[in-house]
Each structure stands twice: as structure tokens, then as C-alpha cells.
Image (cartoon, rainbow, N blue to C red; front, top):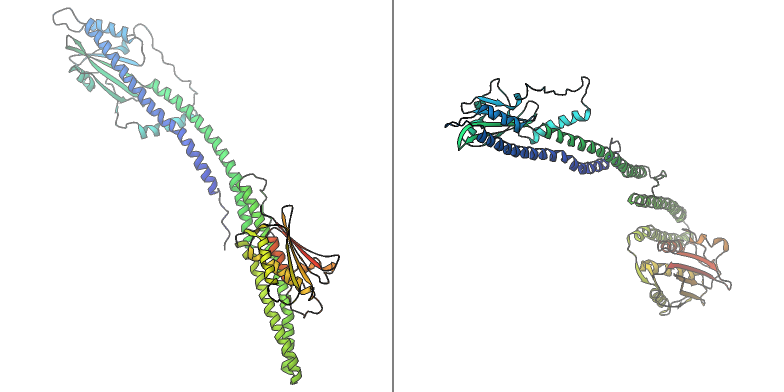
Length: 525
């Protein structure tokens, strides 16, 4: 197995956090596109306003700027006076009047040149465009290419203007109103409206009004700059917070993954995991779980190493005896010696078989305890049933007496394994108890715990061996028992099962003689 690749410039989790947060800001950035639609609505409103103004001015000229003769021709001087009064000194609105021959007879741009000076403020020579304004201009150009129509006709003026230069004026000569949108030299839209100047439904000329959208563009530009500043500020804050958030998530996960990978590649070396257990989030839960798992893994590894060493040591003894007896039997030709050695060989084989069986049971125990789902176990019924098996029939050896103080007594556990503990303790007690003795089984409840006691009438346990008897392969057997009858794993297996159920097992000696084993298990409420 290979270690995961940690040489990334930026983690995938960080990228996902940045992408999700940036996606929310895209909505704010969409406000720039909305302002472009807002500009189009303002331009459409300006065009409608221009049409109303054109009707008013054309109506005034048609009513008041005609001669009194029978033909009722257009009075150019009076028309200019009306245009001067109604248009005024408007720098954005321009009115032009064409007669029926197509000639330009009045232009509001040149009506005030003889009496005043029109001044335009220029920017200072050292004025520089700010970075934000430059971005806005480029952004506006991109948005304009994306949204604005690209087929607008450019606005141009001839030195000598005629009605034929403007199609909408020709339409006005036919008695209809016409309008058009063109693109100015500064990339602003030029709105134009042409209306007929009529007297008694007779077309006397055409009024041509034009205006630009520079004020609208300036308003939209100002709002776009404001939104862009807010967008950039929000983007900067979002990036900082996203990186901080990603650092608090991705970096601990990366450290935990590296430590877990080190544990995988070098299990013999004790790896200390980063401690994030104080965090009150899922990473803290993960850190605690990994620390607990690692601790359990190291304990398991140590237990396996110790178990393997103990097994090797215990198997060597009968193997050495078998080899010695086999070599002696091979060299000896004495029939009496062969008869003596054959029972020893058979006994050593039986001892090996018993030892291997117990070792197999002990080695499978951990895996079974971790995989099997625990369930409520009526311990009073279990103890009563096992005691009845020992009391039934004419079983030789010490008798078994059972006392259950109250019922029900329920614990959470694995029924078969708890039964194995009780049988191990009973068999161990009966092996030390004299033939006419009694093994007492007691079951009671004490402050939320169930107490199971097994007491014999044997010689008791040496004080220095009270703790050792639960070690693997340790035996403290009666002198009358043949060597190797027990493997020394029964009490060790019992302790392993009890501790897996969250309980404890202890041994002591009674004052009146005999040994007592007490199992303490949490009671199920």
C-alpha cells in the first residue's frame, strides 16, 4: 500500500470552500449586468421623453411659425424663436428643423453663439485614470460586447446637413414619427426623433431632435464602480475567511492523514497522532476516535507479540519432551523402556492438542468480541441453567450449589461468552475442591452492578499468586494433578471476556479456607 500524495499546492477541500463562497459572490457581481439592463430602461424612457418633447415643439412651430398668406408657409424666423425658447441652453438636447426641400433651416446648437460663450471644463493635464476606473472601462467594454447590440449605426454629421442624411427625417416628411438609436464617437448612444411640422395636416417641414445618454452612462458608471468596490472588498474578505476556514479543516485532516499513513507504513514505531480532541466539532470527534483506535491497535499489537512469545514458550516444553522421548525411543532397544516412553509420548501429544485448542480459542476471542453485537442477557436465568447441568445426574466430584438473591438480573453482553466464564470458574473451583466439597455460586446486585461469585473449599491461592493467576499460561495446580492437564489459559480467557463486557474479575481467599472469584458486571437498567 502506498502513502497518499500530500504535495499539493492547495488542498481540494480549500478549492471547494473557495468555489462555493465565490459562487455566492457571483450574485453580487451579477448586479453589474443588471445595471446594464437598467441603463437600457433609462435610455428607453429618455427616448419616450424625447418623442413627447418633439411633438410639443413641432406642434408649437406648426401653430405659431407659419405665414399668414394663403399658402401658410413656414416662418423660419418665428420657428427659430420658438425653438430657442422651448429648447433653451440645453447642452444635451439638440433640435434641427428641415424644410420640405430637405435643407437645414434651424439648429439649436448655433442659436446662442452670438450672445454667449459656451465653455467646456477640461480635465487637468496630469489627471490619471484610476485602476478601478480602468477595470470599469474594460469591464464595460466586455459587458457591452456581451449584452449591447453590436449592429448600431455610427452617428456622423456632414459639414452641410440635409434631410437625406437621416432616414427618420424622410419618414417625418411623409407625416409619420420616426426614431433611431445610433452609436456616438465616445461609445454613448445617440437617440434621435423626427416628427412632421404640420399645419392643417399639411407637412411644412420636419423637426429633428437628438440627445445623448452621457448622463445615464455616468450614473451607471458610478453605480458600477460602487458595486465593484463592494464586490472586491467582499471577495477579499471571503477569500481570507475561506482560507481560514479551510485551514481549520483541511490542515488538521491532512495532519491526521499523514499520522495514520505513518502508522500504516511503520506499525512497529509508536506514532503520536495530532491532538484535536478539544475541538467541539467533527474533527475533534475524528481525532478522539483515531486516538482511541490507535491506542487499541498498539495494545492489540503488544498483546499479539506477547501472546506469540508465550505460545512459543509453552509449545517448546511438550515439543522438547516429545523430541527427547522420541530420540531415546529410537536409540533404546529395551522393551521396558519403550513401554515407559510410549505413554509419555501419548500424554505430550494430548497436552499439545489441548494447548493448541486453547490457543486457538484465545486467538479468536478478540475478533469475536469486537464483531459480535451485544444484547441484553438474563444472567439469573443463565446461571441457574448452568448450575442445573452440574447438579443433574450423578456427576462425580464436588457438588455445585447456586444462590440467586433476586431476579431479574440483566446485563448487556454475549450470552455464550458469559456462560464460558461461569463454566471456566466452576471447573477451576471443582479442580481444587475436595471430592466431598461444595462449590457455591452466588448472584446478587450491588449499586448498579451484578456480582457473580464462585467459591470453593480448596486450599486457597498463595497471596503472591492472586494477580498472576489471570496471566496467560500461568498455572497454580494441586500437587495431585498431573503436570500439563491444564493449559493455563482458562482464567486469562475469562478475564478477557469480562473486561470486554466492561466488568472486572478478582480472586481472594476466604478466612475459613478456600478461594473465591468475584465477577462484577454493569447491570442493565
